[in-house]
Length: 95
Image (cartoon, rainbow, N blue to C red; front, side, top):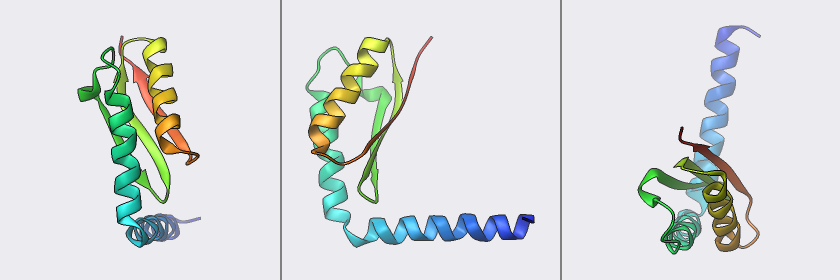
């Protein structure tokens, strides 16, 4: 596949994701807010190093945590608040 075909495929994927997100922005925003709120309930987590984004009904959690225990807490809180929506954990442990 040449570079132009790859670029076209990537642009199609971005456009498709944008359309999916635009279809239900209120639901996506509510879901992201619910996940942020649930994660924020834990005083042990530094939420200023985490971000939550919802695209096409999938919740993405990014950022850094200090330990694997914190990472597991973030995952559990996100799953609880997502109510069955897919959660993708992209957090990393800070060294």
